[in-house]
Length: 288
Length: 269
Image (cartoon, rainbow over all chains, first blue to last red; front, side, top):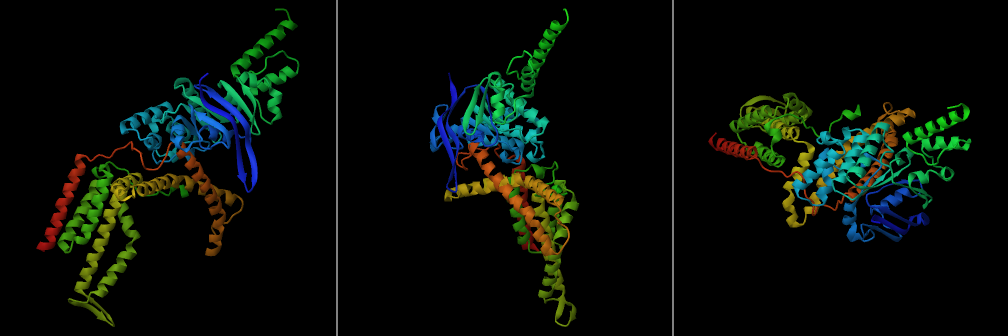
């Protein structure tokens, strides 16, 4: 298996006035190249810290994090790590540096010292990828939240990273902006083959993932395919997280004695399971 | 609305002056301003005034905008005129009472100084009306690049970066101030009445949250910039390379001719 990010046996602590609080405890996780991983967990579960460790912004207190075989703990590797793993943050306003959209997207490639014509090509193609090319000469503060977040994403993909870590990218957006950003993220994974690590607390965003990791108080609670993870509804509810509405519906019906499978997430799958159930029930009652 | 405040005073229009290379525009403006003070007699000053008027017309920026700027410093113009008129006491006496003596030379001097100030204001607003703040910052950074030979390269880059980020965040912070003001008003804060001291005090609940959120934004932005491989000015390349075009050389030539004319007028008249 080819892993782009390897987190092995990592412990991370914050020290605040002699109070040491352990955020991550002996955590190990590897992210496969080209995959789409979702990390779930509520506030304080350590998921944002994990994201910053994976993108090299934070260094582990013990254990190692490697990106494409490079150790993030070494200061000298910093640029090499950042150009491989990009990161998109929660607040789109606080990631945009320049006063014109295309100049902001150019910021990363400019820092890499690429030739001007290469920068131009990358900026144009990145803006087209996120569907913001028509806005290239606009001022960022006049864009909507979803548009700003897409500009921020373009700024990262212009550096052509292998992996992008998204830290709750949709939590400050309205439903429309959220959909725009999620569509962009799926496209990056499917069409550009960029490895995606998405940190979120929106259950609907899990649907298309290859893998779901559920975190609780600095440890990995569940890890597997979305359908496997969401088969364990009780365990997820125990730590105060919700499951997707479709999973919840089928779970409740099953509790009431209906024969239904676990871990159904997609709306279409849910509908066909319910139709099949109705058909079965009808056959039981009347002759068919 | 507080949101309507514009920073800088760029006026978008399509003119050759708008399209000039910002570096050239900055250098030409500085030269032009120096020559306003080189002009020593009425003829050369009239000439430089005519030139300014011509440039204003070419720029397609509405004349009313320039008048607004002149109005803003009208007081300074009047004060300088009065002081000059009182100070110069040679020539024909036009008016004399108590210790005040107004002479023809004094009036001439006052008019001359006023004209100078007005031309100065018009020509410098011409630069800011036709150049975006971003272009200006960029021009300053590139013009000061040779300072790297005396070890100031990084300082120049950092200054330019700071100005760019400030320009980027002004609208964001104005929006935020607006939100905080609404939130405090909803909690019953009274921002509009009371003595001056009370009103200044009423600003504290607005400034404190604004300051805290700015610090948080700065922290976020620093992380985002780090993620985008920002490592200061060294090794950084720019996407937009400024290149001098024909019109830039032409404008430089025109200005040199005009400057020579002013020197000639100074000597002849």
